[in-house]
Length: 367
Image 1 (spheres, rainbow, N blue to C red):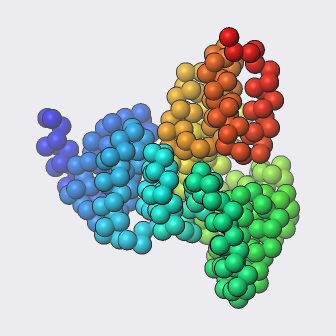
Image 2 (image 1 turned 120 degrees about the vertical axis):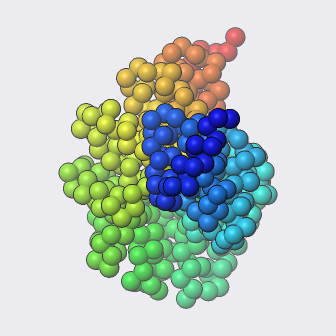
């Protein structure tokens, strides 16, 4: 362990942002082990640095080293019991371990953090009580029609079940109750994108941006709306503004990677996807897009690695299972492809299920 002393001394000389940036730079350079070692020394010496501790837990989770990931994130919660982002990570950890009750408890504490409602819906589906869970939020919303949170929360639950039309009714109630709240405007706008009502979505997102031009979520969603409208040139400034507001914004990084892909610059796109993975290793979109690029350029080993790594942090993501199946299939690994198509179908994501069923039917029967 000759590295321990110099690393410890180096860590003492680094400010909190520098320590995190240095770790992320190592991950981007392919040295995740080095980043993990550095942070495993730095974090105990700087227990108040929540950003570094979260990243350390993320790196443990990617190994995967669930025991140390859990211990790292629990140490954060012990200092700050209301840290929703870390509760959300613990929910993902327990979901990956099939600890459904523990996952639900953590996702409940993470609401309304990113992924909290989606995590709750998935775990209650696995537990077999999803209708009762959804109905509880419905009763709260209907019994308290002037409670903006009750309306917004039920809308978020409905959206996580892909019931976008009904979700919009409750999101719009929330907007009526809080017309100058960016959170309600973004929720309603985001759901309108899912409904394909793109100009209506932009109208709500523009209302938020008029209140706060640097709102991260509104900029990301506005940029994605312009992509859906096939106006990629208009999209880029929104993603760049989002990244200026939040330098580690994984969604903005993935979206900029998509634009680079669309412009034929796939190697530049890969750098954005890797940055996104480093910024938030539990976000599946970066693994999907990275693996897709590798697949398109016949780098099948790298594509497999990207999809498998993504499934280690998002085991219920149907898109990852589907793309891994496609990668196996194109290489003639029929048995492995069949398993992944079946796993994709089991996720019940409508578009994924349809595609996986169609391609599974074309495979030769098992021997």
